[in-house]
Image 1: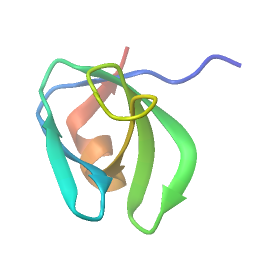
Image 2 (image 1 turned 120 degrees about the horizontal axis):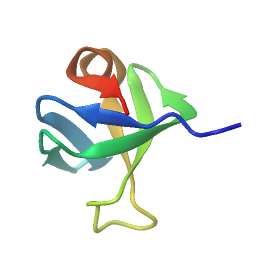
Image 3 (image 1 turned 120 degrees about the vertical axis):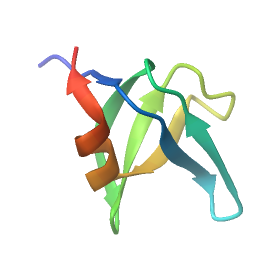
Image 4 (image 1 turned 180 degrees about the horizontal axis):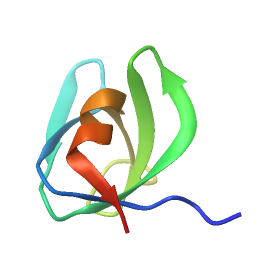
Amino acid sequence: MDQVRLKLHEAVECYVDKDRSGLIPAGEIVEPTSIAVGDKVRVHWGGSREGMGFVMVNQSKLESSADPV
């Protein structure tokens, strides 16, 4: 099964851990995973400099700010 890829049409805040956050700019492509914690979902973002490129984003914000690629 192919991984869903989404292209952001507006910037989305991302969370590396409880103390660090950042911004995924509009135009970037992310790949949501099945891992969710509360209202946040884990996504793979190639622009992340953390770990393996995974960050958490607010799921409803992601859904309203992105379109399938």
